[in-house]
Length: 358
Image 1 (cartoon, helix red, strand yellow):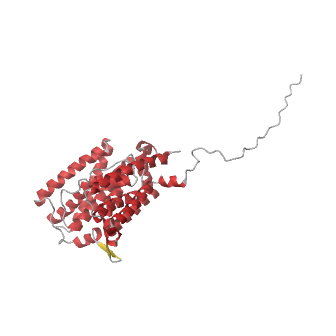
Image 2: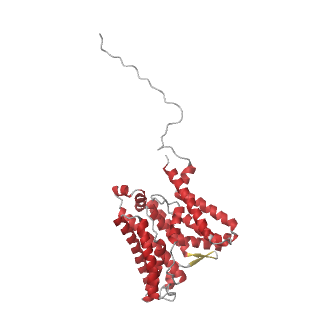
Image 3: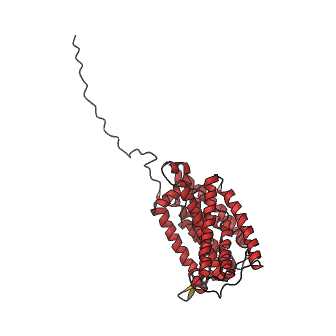
């Protein structure tokens, strides 16, 4: 009996005609969906809609000087909304940001006036104090593991009480003394609170600073290692730590960036009005956070941009001033604010699901 086995010739099956099979990792979504998944696109469309609405509802908005006022209101919110947004992308938020602005301004005013110093000494010491508040918030957060809500709520109450008590103790009043005749005031005012003539329209310097800070923040987020760290710690800090991200440094530095923003806006207020009311600032932290949320930053962290809060702040300024130019009751601003915030949260929820859908 023969034990030899004969091999059958191989049969080659021709490839099936038609489209190639793809899986979820290689399938590209339509361009429109990919664009809408960008955190800043939704708020940009919203800002355009609000602008067009007030062009018809409030004709004075069409005037260039009115637009300069709108951009000024937006810039005072937007400068603080930028570091608040970076902090939120990093997974935290700061409830003390509003009163920290006033604390910084009060520190610079009282140290300069009471100690008869050049105002620049007060400005520098206020910067050190503001960075110290941010350092304290970040250090407490990472060392205790407490939620940023509790840590910064405590700081908010402390600063609010200190602002009122120390101002009354030092000046005998609820406001600081006028520092407009002190050495260095005009130079500081030129940096923090001057105006630039552009085509016959007075444009506040804060608008320029706002755009510069936005460009810088965008570059940091998209082009630097530090920007990657921010997204990483906001997404999952334990995973970030496992791959070598300095979580403690990143968290603390983000809180210090909020302190820097509070210092800058505080200096603007001081050198715009020459004096500061100690009870101001309460509630502004919600405006900053809302501008960041409307700008596409998720409360859960790990997602957002620096451009989105620019448009979010513009929407705030547009609504705030547009209501005035339209001759409506300004109390409606809060209602508009609530509608914009709820709408932004719903859009962000949809964007998050779209961005993660395969």
